[in-house]
Figure: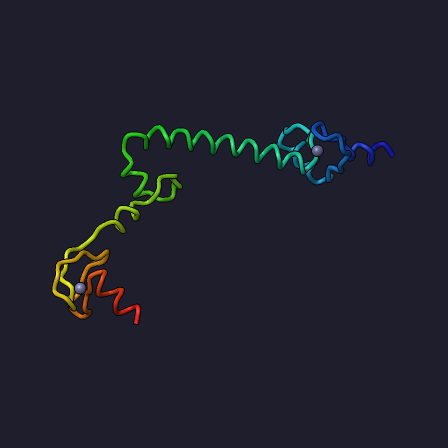
Length: 130
Ligand SMILES: [Zn+2]
Ligand SMILES: [Zn+2]
């Protein structure tokens, strides 16, 4: 009677009773580990909290080491830096070219290639509007 009852444990965190599998009990006894005080759900939650604490420590050390050299964080990528990519600067880049229709100098947001005619804004809109 009591032998089976000892497999039932009440969670120290949420107070729910849960069963400790005799295999786990034996496993813990063999390794000299204490018996579980929390139900599996709470144990997972506690573990996750501990992990997030560790991750938080890592992120903090990352922030410290990358505070001065932003190039390193850009190259690593996997650090998940919150820094926006440098793409916004690239899209602002404009290239000087000559309009294929009116011959006036204009600027385009892409590298003009020889295989396609490039138009100034006025000519481009005029062609599109038709
Ligand atoms: Zn619990
Ligand atoms: Zn033009």
